[in-house]
Amino acid sequence: MIIIVKCREAWNVLKQYFGNFNLFRSIPSTIGAHEHQNQKISTIIFIILLILSFSILILYNSIVVVQKTMAIKHPSFAEYSQLFSKYSSALTCPCTKLSIKYENFLQMNFSLHQLCTSDFVTDQWMNFVAYIDIRIPLDGGDFRVTSRSAFPVLRAFCRLTNDTIFQNLIRFYAIDCVSGYVITSDLFQTEAQALINQFIASITKRSMLPLQIIRETTPANGLVSGPLSNYNFFQCKNSSYIFTTPNSYSNCSCSISAS
Ligand SMILES: *[C@@H]1O[C@H](CO)[C@@H](O)[C@H](O)[C@H]1NC(C)=O
Ligand SMILES: *[C@@H]1O[C@H](CO)[C@@H](O)[C@H](O)[C@H]1NC(C)=O
Ligand SMILES: *[C@@H]1O[C@H](CO)[C@@H](O)[C@H](O)[C@H]1NC(C)=O
Ligand SMILES: *[C@@H]1O[C@H](CO)[C@@H](O)[C@H](O)[C@H]1NC(C)=O
Image 1 (tube, rainbow, N blue to C red):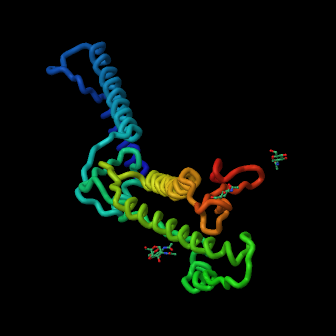
Image 2: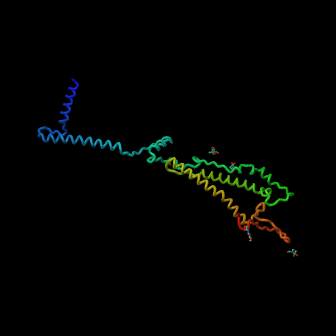
């Protein structure tokens, strides 16, 4: 009972205090009731506007993102990754080292066709097929005749391919990757894949170049192949000279076409 009475008393005191609350009280307070009323209204409006402006300020601060530039010196990769996941678009990270050789971050392994590691390119096999018993007459297309030149060509082709890839890889690894800023992981992956694809495409073209040259110069110079597949020798009955004559396959002469 006592508490309720005390509460009511306190309520009345508060009511009286706020009822007469006046921020614009004039001194001395010898003014009319009308002006007193005006001052009270002004106080209410002032307080409402004050609360309103504070609310707007708080709301604005909580909604609007303010960009602030921060510099972190020598971040570790873990720090960089963490920052990147938070501020991917705003993050820039200049490099102290502008160029890095490809060999530091790219590695390409290659394997040749299994024929190039088989017994067919070994010295033993070459020696074996090189032997021909001259007492046995053989046709020009016989395997024992063609194999003598076919397998060395196969071996040369394997070596040429291996050397071409090997040399070009060395050259490729020595190229510098230049970037002023750290690039994103996704972009880096894409770029690396593109570099590798480009390398493979260029190596394919480059390996074919020596073969094309051989193919063009052989008929142009009239070079005779080992198994006499493109030219044949003949001697006129009355002459001491030996002549060559081009072979033809399906009406296509070896003197005209390399294929
Ligand atoms: C590529 O070759 C290197 C050295 O020859 C080796 O250390 C590496 O494991 C190979 N990578 C693959 C994917 O075969
Ligand atoms: C390819 O060439 C490299 C270097 O010359 C050599 O080490 C390797 O054994 C060669 N591989 C083949 C299959 O010939
Ligand atoms: C072959 O040569 C001899 C002497 O050199 C000559 O008498 C003869 O007519 C020649 N025969 C032919 C077919 O050219
Ligand atoms: C080759 O040419 C001859 C005449 O020049 C012709 O009779 C023959 O049908 C041709 N053969 C082929 C396979 O083109």
